[in-house]
Length: 474
Image (cartoon, rainbow, N blue to C red; front, side):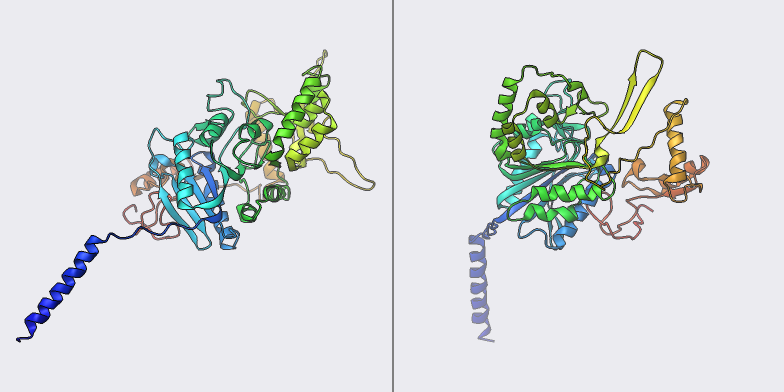
């Protein structure tokens, strides 16, 4: 026993010394992340009809599939996601998608005064992009609704018009977006939304990038097929034309309308000079034949869009202007479905002349010997019972000629999603079933929110795939 006390004393000295050293030397900070060649940010503003339809989640699944198939090419992919219903706890977050899967790298508070289209939030996300995924260069994909340069009844500060994004009815005008991103430099900007392929938008954002891709008219709600296009954004030189072409082919192969283009903004100064020269020489900004220009009209908007080349040909476009345009627009395509038109002419008599189908005044198409051109399909109806009668006519036609088993009676169904979202409660579900049954309904679908006993399915951040009933709700 006499040797025990020195040993204990020695042990205490050693352990105390070790403890003091750990206390005196703070934990070193994590090593800084090494920049990759390119980080691409998808800025997804989806608390709107797109998110309500699950299109944001669908695109994220496509991105995840592409990443798993090696399409990131050593780069990094971030998704800032704003999605519905924000008011029930689905606050925005930053997601990183890698070959291994998805990981939320930052959550953002849902402050009532800050929307995802506010300059404050956009500026914050741009800074987070650089901190979370440093890179030698950055690419930006803007995902949401947009209306390009259409309308402006309240001036440039009326955020309903000439704007990008829709976060619960809030938008950001293109001039404000340009000033918010001032100082940023992207290797490309791609608009996965409608109506941004116009000269006004390109000119407004000219200081932010040298490459742009966009749709000059409306784009299908599915947007890009990311599982097929994502790799183009991570090539050593971003292939914006390749992404646009693949998207166009996706719609065209399905008989869907699509117009897309790719732009090289390094050619913009030359094009601007050539445009000034044409305008300076034009004797009249409203030349003969201007009434024959085909407008693109979006219902409810306050102005039309026109094909710029058609207009400037009437003004007297010269070879320099045409060549400059060809340098600016590096690729373009339009499906036949996008060149249809409807027109009603009324003359001095009691007759009205109705024209529909392909626009024969502005869609000249030269056929080679033996070549065929099939015009777009057109379905017409007439009713003296108003829009309700016209709608019923189309329903009967669709059931008879377009739907599988359209002659069979369908059961009446109620889905719980739009009523309660994730807030499933057994008593309310029983009441819904009782109510729809009283109205003659025959089917009830209890949608999202009923599963996830471990990680509760109260929002879209947990439990997807855990198909176990949450007994606290049911």
